Amino acid sequence: MSRIVRAARAVWEFVVGDDPFTALGVVVALGATALIAGAGAPAWWVMPLAAVALLGLSLRRAAR
Amino acid sequence: MSGPEVGLAISVFLACAVEAVEALTIVMAVGVTRSWRWALTGVAAATAVLAVIVAALGPALTALPIDTLRVIVGGLLLVFGLQWLRKAILRYAGLKALRDEDEEFASETDAARAATRAGTGFDAYSFTIAFKGVLLEGLEVVFIVVTFGASQNDIGLAAAAAAVAVAAVVLAGVLVRAPLARVPENTMKFGVGVMLTSFGIFWGSEGAGASWPGGDAALLVIIPGVALVSLAMVRWLRRAPTRRALGEPA
Image (cartoon, rainbow over all chains, first blue to last red; front, side, top):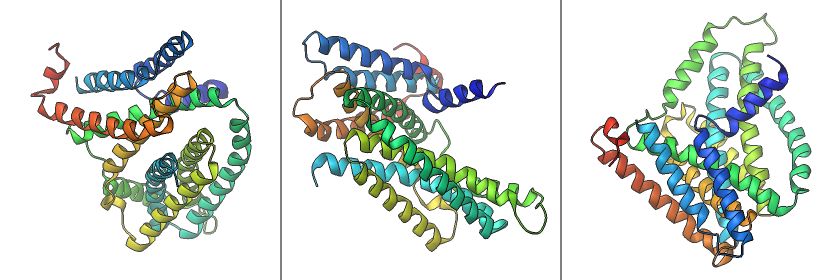
């Protein structure tokens, strides 16, 4: 395995860990915030709601 | 000191204290059983490497546009924070074993005793284990300081809070001279998870273009809000009759 692949895997493990759905959800929520804010509407509520939903879903998966 | 500055100092202090506890456990294990001299040499070498990384990373991160930095850092903090919170909540709910520092200390001690010392001089095992432990945990401290500090434009305060945290943990370790089971690690991790998640929500939203009602004062609502929701999730998991039932649709 090349050093680049090992480094990429290490970064992935460090950032994403064992729950890629949560990381993906955060990216989607940030994108939604940017879109709503870009349209001129209040967007501060998106991230808190997304965080609660992602945490709940992550716990639900882990508890299975 | 303003509210956001207090929040910054507390969150950096707690996060760095957790990392310091982990590093200290490793160093104490090899120091007690093998060689304090080479364990501490490993600590010094790791600290020197960390200093170079700080010098290299700090300017690169602060040169980024602030909104870009906030959205990247906010996203990363939120991902880390949710991971920490998930594990801490699962431990509180009894669905994941509490981390046992005594067990980890004994494990490190056994591994150290089992290793063969290379020659009578340089103890490569003590040096390498201490170096690796301090470097890895130290990198996390550097990450916390640079990202928290840069996003609040106050790296000095973040660095000071980290220094106090590391000094406090080292002093505590020296005073008790025992494994660190007395430190309620899951409580600290829960608190750190709340802080990371709260700052991630705040900075991520700002970086993506949202404006918070009340500006920075919104943190005074976000932090207790995240803590309350997390505690409610602990109760929810504790009340669930079985693990299988949790996964079934309501």
